[in-house]
Image (cartoon, rainbow, N blue to C red; front, side):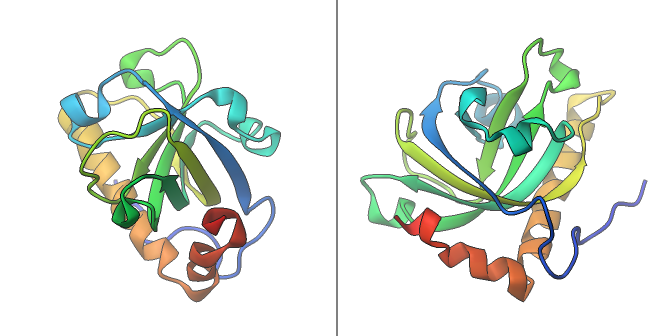
Length: 163
């Protein structure tokens, strides 16, 4: 199945942007180990109501971890899985943020700030791990291309992220 290379309108539209802030918590331990795609997990309680009421799926935007390492405290592109991850049969909805940057260390307990700017796709099940990883890699590429537009680039410098 061919997927769109860029998602969302050229000019940001409601309900976006959606901002949230929360501490990074331990997740299921699959992102780095099993998928090779590390995620920063946050408690579903910090996800704003507007996003909680949206479809389970993959979203994109910008994120910043308030970290001791200056180079790790910049604003980076992110894609986020919000849902039940049917491939893993999760019973509770989770928010897993993949920040598109290679961090030197983990940052459990650090503050994560994110601005969600758009929706990529609904969550789905996969016949195998390779198909899941391939779709996540496509999500990352779609995130990069979607954020490259001028209206989306400006949010990288949003006051909320830079506080």
